[in-house]
Picture (spheres, rainbow, N blue to C red):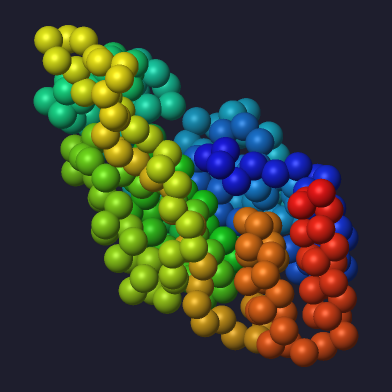
Length: 284
């Protein structure tokens, strides 16, 4: 999930404008697929973000800040133990088993060779709803999912925790790479039915087909997976700042300014001016 990567120079004016409002009311990010650092583009504003980091392998696999919350477990629709199919390429591991007949059609570095199961391990899984109801985490303002075919169950496990959520960023699949996974159309339907609209869609994964075991470099690769950004259409007044912050963070500056206009305060006007200044700097 690097398409939305940013750096502090591209965001510092906006960050300074939002900082006074979020330093004591942190922006709560569910970071599903939390290994390493806080995900982009949120890394540039980590001082005003509480990252809720789900990771079943232990907190030594993530880099946390003092305000982060670590949850031992992968994301799923309910609490429990699931079987993880550990792949030859670790980041291709999944709770859903690999779909070998389909994978055999594609180039080896993405298909069978990468996703062949080396072993199966039992891992704890949690739902967002369960963590919220038990007081382990606050209601999220944003949910980011890069969880290798567990995206739909993770969203289904958050259905009662979306009141304060202004955005979703979900890596999804258009072909059943892992057996039984929820495909892209189901994820988009879930988001739309719960009040979100599509703001961006990035063609994240494209694979070439094989014939007699070989690929043809001049062939067009098949569109396999995407990364989709959803923004909540209607939010109450107390969430407008967080919606505007989200839009600005993903470089939808004018949309953020339109949201801030509805507040009509001197404070919101100052943030609009900051976004405009940042846009001019980034253009230069």
